[in-house]
Image (cartoon, rainbow, N blue to C red; front, side, top):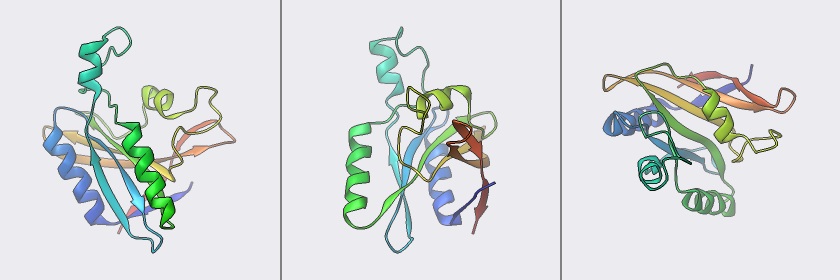
Length: 157
């Protein structure tokens, strides 16, 4: 099992964003700078906007789904790479349930042919928020040999 390390401050920033967005799922990403420093970037969850415009294609609301602006994310990845950094993690919250990688997460974060993750992140982080309080977090990494995301050992320093 791969070990993923993040700082308590980064997790606190993610949890604060998730609590603020409750009962909607929050989403964002973590960039790792060349020097190893991690920085969390909160994103707007666009799921409700898309759900209102096209409920057939987007049947879920932000209570149990997230959709972020991939153009902004791709720009952040490019900027990080220009300075020697990388995309460390895609982040989202689960509302009033566990921090796990759901079947829907697997579908949304895998390429259509299931040969890799959609974004070149080291891991995918899920935090659980219950009744407006953080209640857990978990990291997942894509396994090419299994063609799916597997739980990682999350260490908070």
